[in-house]
Image (cartoon, rainbow, N blue to C red; front, top):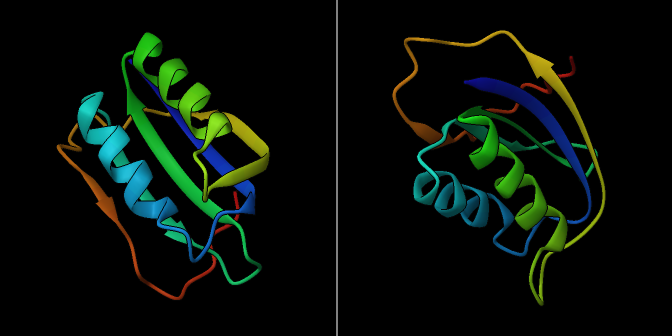
Length: 97
């Protein structure tokens, strides 16, 4: 198991990116969260098996015809063993790590 924090830059707001991430996470059985940042980027924490996380990161970088990720910064975080689901967060608090 591994947990990562990631910030995506590019065309990632107003294009369904958070729901793209949510669908991807649920498909790969990942837990964590995703939310928009005030500066136009999107941040997320993803937790799961290492191979599933790497697959998710490849798909995120590839995007789709609307989502264009120009940069994806990641770092490893401590696990949250009690976390059971993935969710889209809507809070206004900007969260930098």
